[in-house]
Image (cartoon, rainbow, N blue to C red):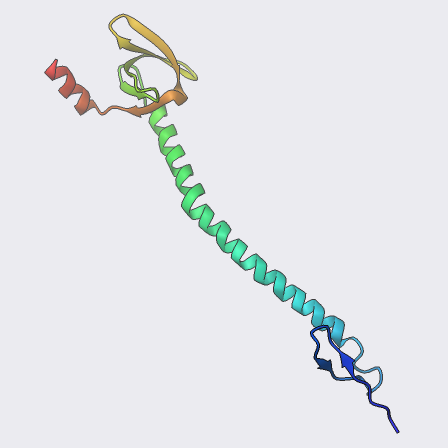
Length: 133
């Protein structure tokens, strides 16, 4: 007479016994590996979504702003009105590799880094200001 054995799982339930010989001996390990891989994919999917959101809402717009700022700085020439990051208004008198020499008042010239330029004032605003003076 075949003796029936009953295995208990870690959750407290009972698992069917393998009384059929060696035909189904590896199924428990394969099921555990599949469950671990499913858990890993379940963790990586939200992480991938987070990376995509981070890229489209933070990295991509910042690159676009940097490109626009670099194009604006490259387009500044002698005689252009600029505003520095510190809030100084000035007229570009000399352009060098990485600096501008600007005149912030009559006879007062300073040298600033190109990266310190915040904006280039439009020519129409400059003409209106000169006309009002």
